[in-house]
Image (tube, rainbow, N blue to C red; front, side, top):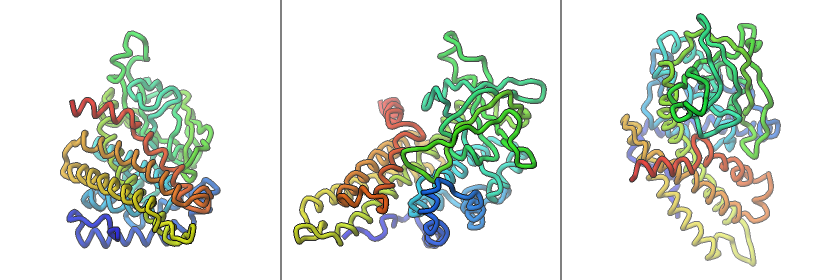
Length: 399
């Protein structure tokens, strides 16, 4: 019989487990009752961020001077493991972009004025952040982005386009990667990474209208993650005060690479948690479903497949927790995090396939969660760096 609590480890104190139940109760009370509606309408009200904030979920590891809880990283792990039970991977991505892909880097690099202006309302759920890196002509190749920011007096003037931007149509600020160095040419192509900067880009005026020069394009329709707000963005001579430059000018590429570690680790945590949930669902279905007079769970072929999956998921869990342990200690752990991201996100595809197969025709129906999970989890091997990029990084780390 499988372990009823696959997350039971010495890392987690009784306080962590109390927090785990708090998150699980929130999911059951606030998210699951709305799941079907939000997935069908492909829209989650912005106000839900305020409810996350009321529980302290938006500032778990943020420092107390800006309203955070200053908890250790294992609270963040617990939160990610339990939030996937909402079965809305899209909206969970919206929240993760806000809490894990933008706010931490602003906290580390931001001035006291920037931290107070952005992070205090961000932790309260009053302002929402997006990360603007991917462009129409490039995804993983962040060194060669083309969106240009030219300093003109006290403002940067921004021109360019971004795509696949999570929180794109709702964000109040975009952590925008721009080219502040020379425009890309054949001559400077190999040194292009040296000319990238981060600019904290406000999207709206005080009355809620979009700032001049900023346009929200199509809200994109995706294969999965329906409840996620994903949009195209355009910048046409948009002026942003230079006080919104984050960190040093032309150091943005290095900041992006550093920030990827936390993003990839969250992806691994969520991937392995999804694996546990899919196996839980599949075993429940296989216990209830009869074929040829037997329960599916009693057929040897499925016993063996499930045994294999449990073995691989257990391995992925240990790999991920090892990376989490190093990260929690402040160790760079590029190799371990990259391995965890690669292994667990690829494994999630396999577990989804096999668990849908266990459901048979029922698994192809939208009313079963495995159908949505199969579509939603496909993104895990693409976002935060494709599996191919992970292998390239590992080839340099390991050899």
